[in-house]
Length: 313
Image (cartoon, rainbow, N blue to C red; front, side):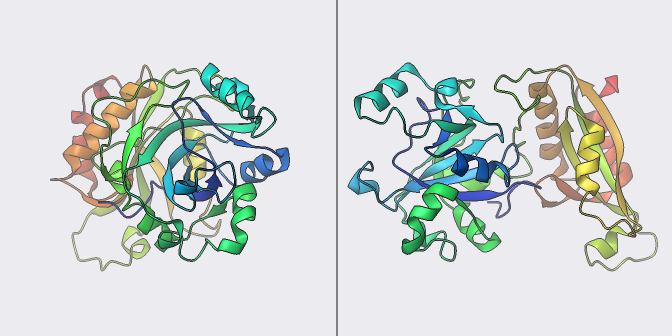
């Protein structure tokens, strides 16, 4: 089980009255300011752990219990943009039509398969007296809290407005298993709009051009040609490369560079190729967590070119 999120992802907690992604394809806020606050801090593909709010709208049996995880996009929408008719009827029937109308879209969801109280996971971030604040603003988890959250057993479920989940989905397994090197964590594609359009997607292999041994605090021996590597998919490779290097000081000598790339007709096929690379890498490269690896760059190159569909690059 992986105890790390994919590179660049964050995990927040938020209290809510329930967890019905099959009908509610969005995460909503009653006040626009609450929704806009989280938009300043999250990125496409970030995650939110939902737990039962201590409010009258919430079933008492769910108060303070972990309900599940949402993968969201940083795109402002309204609730009716991504809600099933049953969802809107339910809200109207309960007098909630004006609640949680300011929203962001949910792309994937995992329901918790075990009953765990939120203080056992967010042991530092969660405080009972801050419950109302977390419900409105949310709160990011610290790395050791994320490690706890990734141990929660979950099952992936359908999200309204998204393709049905496959039979190979995560079932009653630790959430961290979703991020093992052998599993490609699907991302989002397109621009910040309610409707996203698939299209050509690049599978890339990046290499850290610089002293990778120093980067990872490893001793370099004579003849060692190992390098820090990263595999991933992107619709905008130049933009992705800029993100990778954004946190490196301008005066530093090392930089990530795109070593190899291959164009696929859509994101799904590129992600399948990424998963194939990760599965085959187990015997050839050392996993550094998420999409990062350590090993001989020639071995990585040969592995990359062996992936079906890469010959077109």
